[in-house]
Length: 349
Image (cartoon, rainbow, N blue to C red; front, side, top):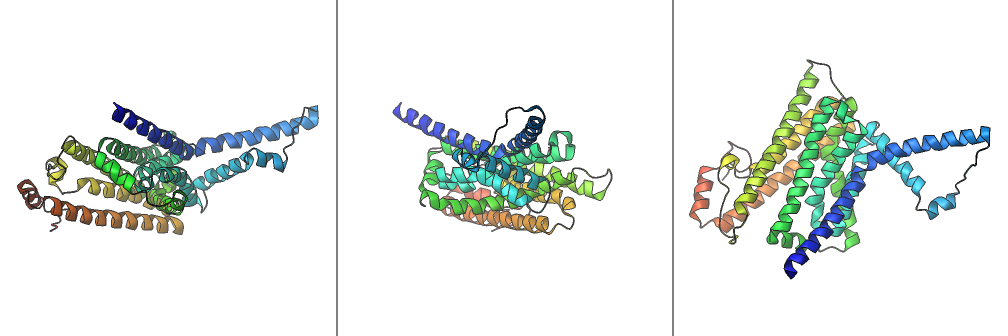
């Protein structure tokens, strides 16, 4: 019972941190809108007071500082919203949203920078774009932003559940807490920039809004959206398949698969699905880039980065499994029958 209470307490602390981080990042658009309307109301009251001699209120610079610089913070948020909608600083605005999620999670648990924080920051950026561009009234933006939100929320939640239910994973993440808390901030900022690079095609699609029916631009965008959804769903299914196959197995040194379903296509279809998702998002954004050098450079760096990460992760996992299960007949048969590691149909030793 004491162990259960301890796990419940830890889970509660995790949940509080996650909710605070996600709400901080994803609430920027709504705050921006309310800030804009609030500013206009203040202007109206000021104008009205001059005519009807209503009570006026003056705000000193020192008062703003005393109250935490609220007006300054609102001004910065307003600039984030404007940067998302137009101009060369859109990727920087996405970085601000991602950082609002990644930084507090990394301070709480260092490994969250590239696990839970990764998924939930992508969700927060997609939600920010969804709200800022009123995507509910634009089918192209709605379907793409929904794919990105689904991907991020599903991945972050899956990684969190796996940590809570698999003791070895929880220990692995906890053991990664090696750097002093404040020293983690530069790393959290760097990965936030990288996540913004990867996600920025969504913002550029939202800026364009729509393409004329029957055009090549519309076809390419729709093809990218379809590929992104397929990749996100493939990763979700294969992650779940692997999680269920390993759940309840006490001997971690025993190979239990999975070996069926999508795992007959390649040994790591979840990684394959993740790459398809990001390739699809980049493809969907291509027609929206035009001559925007920032869009082309940031997206290219994001795609090259995630491709390199997934390629190296696949090699490491293959080597780890080969060393761990090499003497087991089931694993030998599986590796013999499924020779493709990451890309279906491409033989990998």
